[in-house]
Length: 381
Image (cartoon, rainbow, N blue to C red; front, side, top):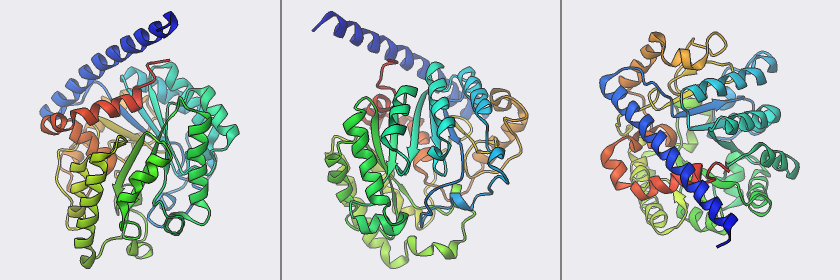
């Protein structure tokens, strides 16, 4: 091995060890805070919605039904996003997920947020539908320091995907993934798939499909009526939800999917999480939620809440995010999480919460480590 290669390996190893030590400290603080019901000192994960506007109208999504700013200027400005990053750094945030709507509708904000987050030691993960991921945009994302990007694909079948997301969206998403893999090998790529009544048959085919595209990660989430979709008219999308006579078929398809994800080398949603999806159709599985303790959400208007299923009045436009995080007013919102009875089995909040469960952590130690490397594998380079 050349000297430069050895130096690079040593630097990445040292960086990961420092990150593991920092995350262990933060995780311990979160666990203690949740147990004793006090405000944590740190906020490990930040979900930043830079816009609710989108260039698609997906059948299962209610983001576009969220209250929109009367003007684009009402969305968080670039300077306000910079302030959020600085406050997140003070809260020792390790991972920031940038989403929308379609986040790349605000390309300048996304690029500067990624650049500044990297400068402050915060890893970013961009969620996109892929339609705006052109060679020119990708070149700028590389310069900004993008590390992980996920693209939404609902089926290996073009017709099924387009029926859910819109005509032409399948080709755009697949072409975006191919562009990422061919021209930006340093960026780790994932696929997000929402399980609905329209695409659940032969869902295990997503695994070889994702493997053929040479992505690193494949994540699944069940369709929801809560979270960002809670303001969507149920009658406009009730056909994407499972009827009683589909439950046995869903059970069989989930079992096939669990077998497929156990065999793949892809980083995937845990089989334990997948196995609980059927119960969501019959009443949500219960778990000890860490929203507001391990993660928080900032919406496009600057409102800071424990999770995206909550409304609130605390805004990063009125006070720094770290000040709000530690305030008594924000802790009142955490109490809503502690007493929450919402039917939720969200891939973000539930999976995060499972990582803070000792039994789940031990059961999924290998997968947790692989996910760590997916998000933080660049070694700070």
